[in-house]
Length: 212
Figure 1 (cartoon, rainbow, N blue to C red):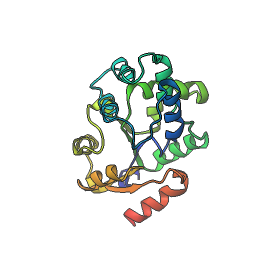
Figure 2 (figure 1 turned 60 degrees about the vertical axis):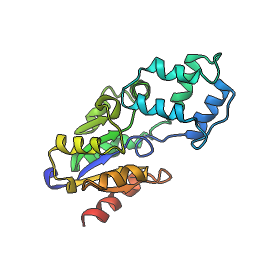
Figure 3 (figure 1 turned 90 degrees about the horizontal axis):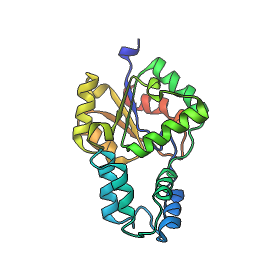
Figure 4 (figure 1 turned 120 degrees about the horizontal axis):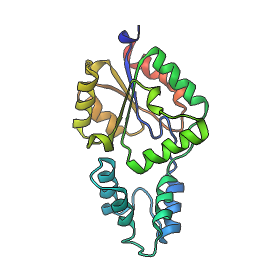
């Protein structure tokens, strides 16, 4: 029975949907004439990204924050650059997600923002004829709807309470170690997923490592 199985929670980016930081930064370089990477991205922009992920600012305020670095930058081009972070989901992955939900209790927990959510929903409808991605899960938790984000402990406590399960029943898979360490601090089990690996090839190993 599913109720006696672990509660599997996936992150979205780099677990289900591949991310391409190099393309994203190259796109911003074309818009702004500035070269950035994860380490050199200005702190004020990192802050605005975090604020967008918890829904504290709107899309216009977020995109306009980039114009501080080049007033001539086009808003639509900046939006496209932001969305260029997101790659395509392998078509076979959707059936894999269906099979997980059939066998396990299954949720999605993601630091995501309104711009990316809209882009992903449009992509899923256009390329995969999927109207409600949420139907692939028992529960979906998006940071910008909740007003909190990983690795803040509050979001893990909220999810635990909402699921109504023992924290030790939860297996969380995320690509960032800080998110996994925070989850483990309240009793979840967790695995840092290397995006080089296919989640299809790793999930059963993650489960056996934590529950057998």
